Length: 347
Length: 182
Image: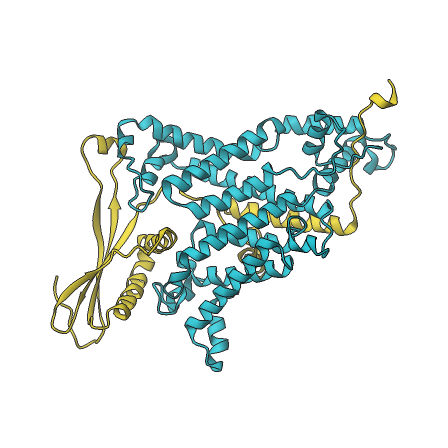
C-alpha cells in the first residue's frame, strides 16, 4: 500500500503547479503531501455512499428491533433477566439509561413498562425517519440517543452489533447521510450536491473500518485457536450456533484451519488491500462474503448485515459523481485513489 | 505535446477553515478509535481520561474489536429447579429466548457466568425472575453449566461434547423456608 501511496504522491507532484521555493510550505514534498491530504479529505464527493449507509443501517436495525420487541421488559426491565442493581453496576457512568427516565416520569404516574415501550417506540420512529431521510439530522439524534439509552440499560445482553449500531447512528448525526436518496433532498432542504463534508465523512468511515478489521484480526492472531483451526471448530460446534451439523470437520481439520487462516488474511489484510483500486473490490467482497458466512453459519445475521452495510457503503459505492464522462479510466482511477475529483471538462 | 493530449491536472481542493477544523476533530476521533482498539489508555490524567471515556461511550469510539479473540469461549447455560411449599419440584430452562436475536442476547448474558465475580449476582437476578414467573415457587435452585467441547483430535478419538455443572446456588423466597436437598 505504501508503495502505491508513494507512487500516487509522486504522480501528484508531477501534475501539480510550479512551486515557489523559500517558504517551507512550498517545498515540493510538503506541497505534494498537502495536496494529497486535501484531496484525500476535502475533494467534493457524492453523498450516495453515505445515503446507502443510512438506509442500510436503518433497515437492519428496524428488523432487529422487530425481532426483540416482544422481550423488552425481560431485557430492560428492573425485574428483567438482569435486575436493575446489577444492570446499574455494569452500565458505564454518565451515559443515559432507562432508570433515569423512569425516575423522571414515575411522579407523573408513568409505569416502568410504559417508559421502556415509549423509548423503544421513539427509537423505531427515529430509525424510520432515517430510513426515508425525513428531517434526517433530527431523526439521527433521536435514533442515536434512544439506542444509546437502550444499549446502556441492557449492557449485559448487548453484543457486538449494538456497539456498531451505536457507532453508525453517531456517524449519522454528524455525517451528511441525508444528502442523497432522501425526502430531505426531494423537498429541497438539502442540495444533494457533492461536498467536501461527504468526502471527509466517507474517509472517517473507511479509516474506522480499517481499524476495526485490523484490530480484530491481530487480536485473533494472538491466540493459538486461530492458527490450528480450533476457533472455527469451536464457533460452529456451539449449541447456539446455526442449524448446521459441523461435526464432520473433525475428520478434515485442514478445512477448519483454512477457514481460520482465511479470516485472519481478510481481516488483517483489509487495512492494506482495500485501498489500492486493483484489490479494493475483491477485498471488500471477500469481507462481505466472510460476514455472509458468519450470518448463515453462526446465525449472527444482524451483526453480519450491519458489517456488510459498513463495508459496502464505504468501499463498494462510488462517490465520484463529479468525474467527467470524458475522463479516461486511468484518470478516474487516479482521482479515486487520491480522492481528488475536481476535474471538469474544461480543466 | 499538444495541450489536448495532456491529461487535465488534478487540483487539490482548497480546504476552508471550517473543513480543516472538521478534519482535525475527525482525526482526534479516529485516534481515540485506534487507541481503544489497541487497548491503549489515551490520556494520563483522570479528568481527561473520564471525559474521553464518556465521549467514547457516546460515540462508540471506546470499543475494542476482539470478537472471538484470542479464542472462541465456551458456551454457558443455566437451568432452574423450583420448589413450592409442599416440596413439589418442577424445572424451567434452559431458557434461550423466542427468536434468534433474543437467543443471542440471552447467550451474551449467560457468557457472564464464566466470571466468578458476576456469577453469583447473575444467578440471584435470574432466580428473582423465576420467582416472578412462578409465583408458587418458594425455592429456586440455579445451576450454571458450561458446554465442554473436545478438540477436533479428541472428537476424532471418540470424545463427545457435554454439559458440565459449574455452580449450584439455592435462593429462597421466604427466609423461614429451608431449601430442599437435591
